[in-house]
Amino acid sequence: MKRTFYFALLVICAVLPRSALAYCSEPSFYSSEPTFSGSEPSAPSSYQRPGVPYCLSSYSYSGSHTCEDYELDQYFDEVNEYIDDLNDYYEEAIEFSEEARAYAEQAAAFANDVRRHADDVLDYAKCEANEVKQQHE
Image 1: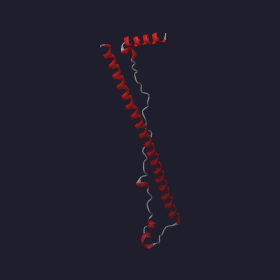
Image 2: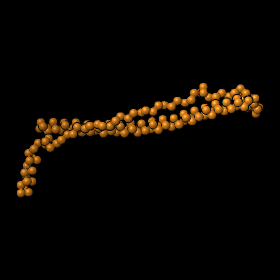
Image 3: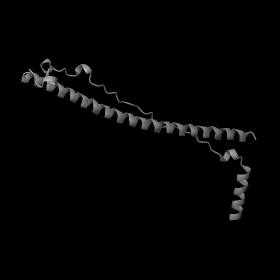
Image 4: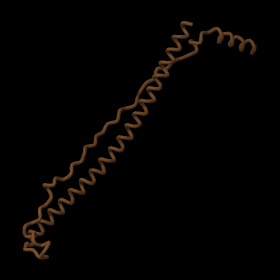
């Protein structure tokens, strides 16, 4: 009984056209394109840099100044504020570079997905062409 079954199966496979046994699966593409939401940080303007008060102009060569305490306090507050702005810019630049790096990685992965999809499309087209060719042989 087994021999008869195997023989019948062999005859059916030999008689059937090869295209009936082939199956071409159309590829689908589900990858999402990466987006970059980061915005370039802007450095503090050089116009924001605090100017040295006039009362300190002779300090570099004389070692003394004519500033009142409130003038020095105001100048040092402005310097500290400018330093804080520069530190904020530094942090924003680090964050921007991390976002850019992540975007580049996502873009590379997307490009690889597109390449794999193109390969799948090529394989599908070849399969369909072979089926058409075998139908006319």
